[in-house]
Image (cartoon, rainbow, N blue to C red):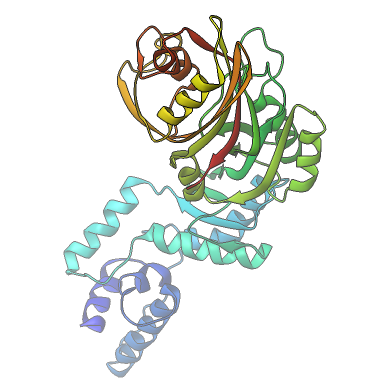
Length: 386
């Protein structure tokens, strides 16, 4: 069957060994070019036995236009396009003209061939092997860079895949937003991203696992975050050195920096975390030790129904969220102040839990006390992963 169909092909079409062998790519092992040479050799042995002249490989392949002979040129183009870019793994893709792809499929259909592979698949594979041999780089399904080649227009497109770095940050002072805001010179994001951009040569995008208000500190074990570095020129980053530069700000501190996969980055940003808070509460009408103790006892294990607070209503969907307080401890300070330490579900607005937000959060500390209370200071003590 193979020889019969091969004979029909070479008698009708002038195909190079690559294109001939590719018709039977799913049979046996080896390269398509090697298959083509073997098929042509056996066919010519039979022709010789019958006194017929051999059918040599044509001067120019009518299907691929000898594109495989130009692979060394494409390797040179790839090296030039990636000059100055640090990477260890790569992938090759290509865009072939529609007329070549259609002509190839027509040959398959005409001869009833079901063992072929497309020309772009062989081209990508052979070019990848040649580039890897030339540079010492390796192919990967999750590559650092992707080369897209247009073989007949000699265009090359270089896609540099993002680099993802995980860490946790502490915000040591109040008055800094997490991301840039008008009237604020700095943000957690800008302080963290600056040394990443300078070191990598790429554009840095900061993504926090939740956020705290401008006037709230983030302490303890820190809030998880991901830095996405787009089109990095350098991928081997001195993370300890970057951490030292960030921590030198004395306003933001980072911990546990490490490079992660895109899947790990997504998990960090979508995981639901419990949070531990410390709030300083003011009660203008006064509060006793007994009242503080009673409020803490009631809050412990309580389910809170919280409608989207007034202050964020423009940027959040207006709905009721049900959150749980897992533990509550309180300490009386003076006749108008007490501290309350809470472990809650993620997404519970603590300031509104205390004030009641004009009835939008219930029950609230104000409601439990029967007196107007509000949060004077708030710290996130820990982000709990479990």
